[in-house]
Image (cartoon, rainbow, N blue to C red; front, side):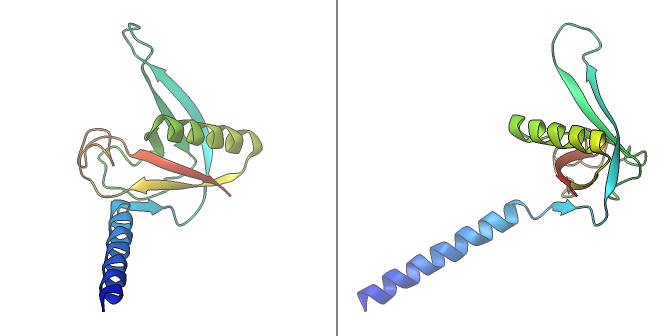
Length: 133
C-alpha cells in the first residue's frame, strides 16, 4: 500500500513537471512557411557611448503574422539569451550566404517585452529562434 502511494505521488509530480514545461513555451509559434533572409543588420547605440546595439533581421516576406504595431515590413529584432542570439545570428548568416530558407520562432503571448519591442502589442516583433531549412 505504501509503495503505491509513493508511485502515485511520483506520477503526479511527473505530470505536474510536464504541464509546467509545456505551458512555459505555450506562446511560441514556428512560422508555417519558410522565408529567406534578405538582410542582417546591426544598429549601434546612436550616442556612441556604449557598445549596446540591436540586431535586426529582414526577411523577403513577413514570416509570421503578428499583432505588433510595426510588424508589417518583414523586419524583426533578434532577442533572447546571449547564446540564443549567437545561434540566431549564425543561422541567419549561413542562410543569407547560402540562399537557404528559414523558419522563424515567435512568442505570440503579447505579455511584457517578450513579443514586441515596445511591450504588449507595441513596436517591432522579436524573433526568438531561427531554423535552417
